[in-house]
Length: 516
Image (cartoon, rainbow, N blue to C red; front, top):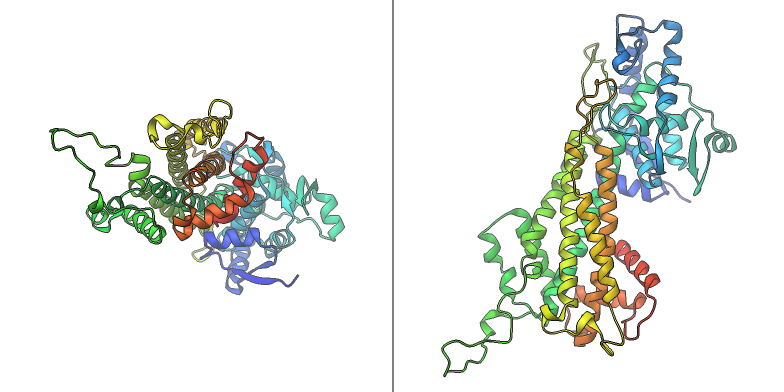
């Protein structure tokens, strides 16, 4: 495999680059010469000052035990003790993608040159990243202040040759893998254990991947909304440019424009000026058979999806600042020859951004679920057979079972919407008395997004069944026609009742593959 090179600087890493790097093994990561020079200067300052005064984490205990001074002969053991004592995560391992992204973000933080680590440690991290030796990191353990101490400790544990890693898709002992590859375990130096585990790199890495996935979910939701508009032969004025310029929220204007672009080639959308229902001139009040305005889940797409777009963009902004920041403690200010004791490891920015993202993702599942109900419920849509039954209602059940899955999955999302940002529990001898729960927020957001793919897949199956009922595929817009054709290759229309669980899984995979 021919490797391409990506150079990290510690200053300008983008979310899109993280996504590419963790998903493309052909990319080799390197560190810029300028960053390497700053790392050397920072490490030199640490070595010069390690016996001078009292510096947290260099010659003191940690957390509430910072008042204990550690002798010069034990300061290296102190770093090993920190890593081993904190590598106590529980539950299921997080995905290899998240773990690899966390290593990448941690590396980018360390190479800023304000952590005091050695070039040897940087090279070891690079080695693990480029060889795809991915530490096993567990879902439970972080409260998100002092950062992701427990979960980052599992990265540090692997670098010193202990714990477990995923390598070539197999979970195995770190010592076995590095021995096979001829890699020596890293020998920790002063402050390096603390520098490795102190910071927001796990929550930030997960959040970076989530921003990409959230964008894909929004793109899918926009296309599904467009197809819904076509299937009810909606009026164009709900998307009119003038309408949205009169309420010019950037997200609303953006989504309305996207929908107009998608639907430009559709033959199903209607001009309201052409809507002239017949009247009985003998009556003062006439009931007409058609809806004058569509239900909100169809008519208000720009107004509902606009805030989602803005939340994703705001989250991107916050996370890109975070992944290019120095987030450990103390900061090694080698330029002014001092140590800065502070709290850059606190994860509230990330927790807040991810919780906002999660909330908007929940809203998307609600939106899809309501449209599923609209098209399956003949009492509401007045146009389609019950549960889109294309054969014999009463004998065949068509898509009836799928609605239960959409409803239950959406209900779970609503429960998961509770913000971790406000779920603070004091810990660490009340030293960490206000915590962020940022990593939990990110992992719960990931679950919500995964659920969204399920609900959206069910909606796509539902809308495709509507297309089959109306026999209108040739009138769809180019974009929705392509989506319909794609899903029909893996999920045929439901005429006779059949087991469709494998088809549904394929539909979820189809949406994931098409969204990025």
